[in-house]
Amino acid sequence: MQKKTVCIRSFLVLAVMLWAIQAAAAGPSPKTTPPQASQVDASQYVGEETCKTCHDDLAKNFEHTAHYRTMLDKNAGPDHKGCEGCHGPGKAHVDGGGDITKIISFKKLTPKQASDRCLTCHSYGSEHANYRTSAHADNDIGCLSCHSPHHAKVEHALLTDKQPALCYGCHAEQKADFQKTFRHRVDEGLILCSDCHNAHGTLRDRQVRSTPNQDLICLKCHSDKRGPFVFEHEPVRVEGCTTCHTPHASVYPRMLITARINTLCLQCHEQIPVGVHGPQNQYRQSCIVCHNSIHGSNTSNLFFK
View 1: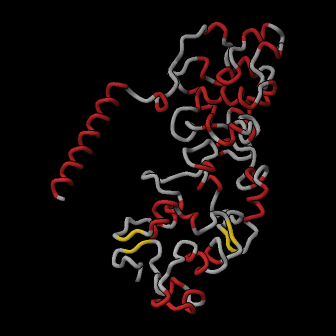
View 2 (view 1 turned 120 degrees about the vertical axis):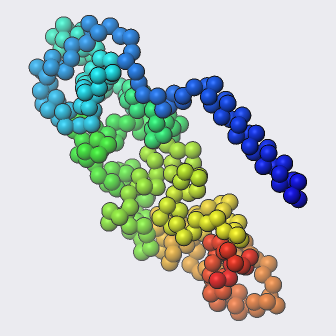
View 3 (view 1 turned 180 degrees about the horizontal axis):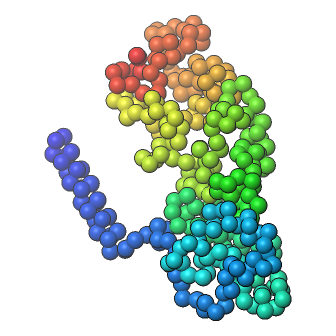
């Protein structure tokens, strides 16, 4: 057994070394590399001050947003600064007397086209990296469905409305969930939708976030259930919290998926020895009266306290 353990450890060390060598050879990841000053024809860019002459109202709003910081970036090219960073070079637009066909107008773009334009800057880093494969992208929910560069109602992330009202605009079923008796306190503002979901996409179903060690985000708050435990409850470790709990709300205590704890347990433990528990205990006395460390235990393989 000891020899086998040494072999496994040696294999893992070798695998990590090979990964490090490949990563070094590949260079930095493109998702973490910020946009550099590109080789563009600077003569086609007129600058923010020229845009202000006609769009003064939009310019005033723009100066109070995070996008205005691009004007202070000395390393960014003209195609990544100010108004023209999003709308493209403005010289032809100005020379044409404000011809709308000579500039990128987001009103004329499809959600995908507009989002692709945003992602020329916002595809760098983990928060937006998975947008193109997200459920929102698949359903034509683009960046401008939730964000407004000029008329945001929420300064943070330039959102068009506060959470959860913004999310409820599409997710009416979830809005109804949070009216149930046992629920996460989303409507009260104690939890935001984005605390558990990444609207820009994740590698998990329903765009659910995960912790750095790839546990479900539930464990960020419910840290006493995190483990690792000496004796793991297999459904908790393998299938996750939603095996027994509904994530948004429930009509049952503890946000369980069934009214009675025993009914839930017996879905997996249907072959409980009658001689040990007796038929009355199986159906009337709650299983967790005895098995009260049901999420995992360091002392008992039967999850006793």
